[in-house]
Image (cartoon, rainbow, N blue to C red):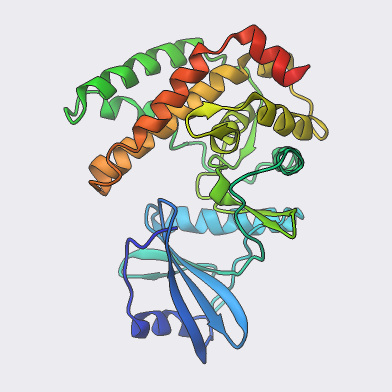
Length: 313
């Protein structure tokens, strides 16, 4: 969560009035994350998160709010949308969509235990069994169609050349008949909350799509099962064991998981390169994509036989 749009106290107060909220005792900008602007709000001892959806138009924001309602209606614990006084799930300010969510109890845990990873795997499989809502997008920010726009922009020729080679390799290698369903799309450590050592919630479903389920597992491994740039096979095993306690992977999924870890890391590198060099240039973050390049390379260099034995046996 980051602050891309700074709002004054009077501006925030005006927005909150649309939700019938007054007597605001606390407003804080929330740092961290990568896509949206977030403020924590306290009103009459109740806490909320106000989010400006920086990369969504109003239609996409409406679909996102409907997804959160869909998840809650299917007993999947995550952020709960607050309605405005006239019953709307979103409002807007200066052309940007805004949602207000109830505060979720829990905190991010940087060093996940094997039990925690098993719990995450189990919860991820539960997500994958939820029916896909009609409003969900089929277009994913990590789709192959998004890659070519960065091939020849001339900001980092070495990286752009590598990305083009990865695009050719991955697109020609990944099977198209893999199971698809509702995915989170961005299950990194800062999107998982724990409370008293127990898994509380997955948050930040902005990248949720109808896509390959194994992509979500590959992304979760990139986000949760490594130390720096090094992938941790033991952590992967715990995540997969939890997952398969709810939903068994097909043989095709198992045989392609390592490839999807590489795909997830490559896709994340692409997003970071675009975000911090083109969309919101940041001198301190402009090389952030290189970490994901190394993870993708590490995944491609792993022995498939060793990987299969370590993770699935």
